Amino acid sequence: MVIDQNGEELPSWLEIRHSGTNRLIGRFVYAFGSARPIAEVKIVDADKFIFSIPPQWEPGNSNMDFEGQLIWK
Image (cartoon, rainbow, N blue to C red):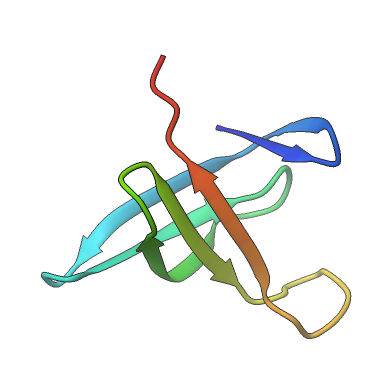
């Protein structure tokens, strides 16, 4: 997948899977670094999702929030 960060396209990947019957969890790699666990991926629309990950090496104490959209080509 590609992440748009201030107009720059960065390579990344995202894995989403079921945990139990109602929860989606996953792993995420930003433009660099290791796979980081995602406690919950929430479906917002048929093709949109959101998730957060806690800071690891990033400055600050706030979670990093992501919003994604499936684009079928």
